[in-house]
Length: 532
Image (cartoon, rainbow, N blue to C red; front, side, top):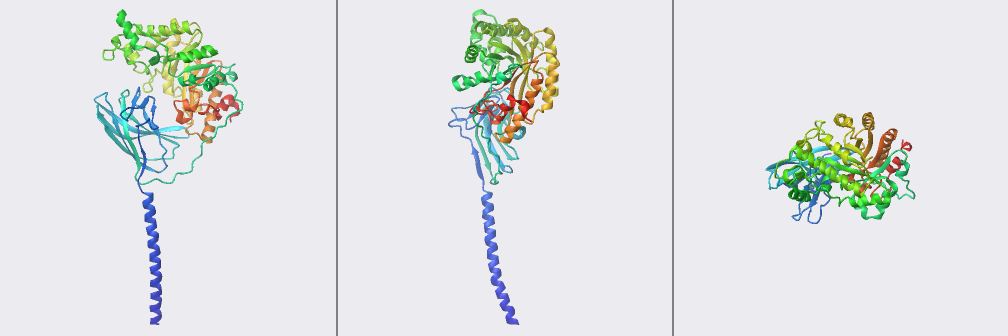
């Protein structure tokens, strides 16, 4: 009995050793696997030695410098910034750092933020902040846990100094604990080349002009010239008729020196001639964009002697410069391109989003609250007879902003110099709602003025079939609203030719893909009622 007990114990001990060994192996495997999964991973490290490395300007110009940094200039708002799209895995924990430098002010506050999109709705998070002294590099560091988003754009912005230039370098991102397995995603939709593509200009000929904004690059490629001729009856230059392109500060200084007249203004149209000549030769109308704007206008234009180091000019001088500038624009067009530029955005984006009244631009600082009235009076005085004059703005579908827009329109309409209102519709799938768009069109239409959609695009968020199907539905719903008011609409213009040419290219917002093939959104615009 005792012997048997000992034998059993011995057998159990051998089995126990085997089990213990197996458990040790399993534990070791687990430790090794966990260690592998938790190993730090370098996700990205910027390299500006050859190019911009995937970074682009968000509302400004961002470019590589000879010092291998990325510099951003031409900023007018805090969010104007260098940005880059990152493929981030849901649940992944990321650490990042970036060096920032500015040389414009004593000190400036910077912030790393992220814009993430899902189902066409863009939301934002601020991830890291820091203050940089003039001429000194400051390092911003932060962490971020990725959510279930289709798109993630990291960008470096300012907190208060809206217009300063700044540089970034050494943007680094790591996943200190490794990365989880990415979840399956929907592949990009393949857009097939269509055998026959109908003409939007012909489809809407009995309702309104259908057009597009044309970037300068398209005038070097016959493919895009043919697309424009077939599809559009009106074109808007993206930048070439903005004040920055038309006002010649150096020549204005020379005129001032020769005449002693502070109101002297020189203009030139070198940048716009390719579009103007194309339109003139092909019987296509042009919409002018824009005479007055708080942005993309030379700062020197508002200062004594055209010198930014000197004070702002007086009201009388600025009114003189405004008149001579507007006069110069129309005299050139009336003489060289009569009947080509059929309408103008005389004033662009004058309403501030915060106060819902006139933003405190240099126009307002020098002239006062009546500067819009003078602008339309001068435009009417010098424009060719029959030219339609518009006020143009964004966020019309936002109730409080719309109140400010209507208040401004009501101050202009009685004077008889304004013809209508231009809706900027830079929308996304989730904002604004179709109901809000409908309400905004109805409210402005009730003023009994002419209407136009000046800048239409709809961010899809991604290039999947699901996203493009939703985008097509949104376009169709918008077009149904516009068609219902076609007796007041002069034109509808998309803001660009193809997704690759769009200022929102990463959101795939237009009717044609990068190769010029029609997307589902195009077919929705062709026949809105076919989209349910």
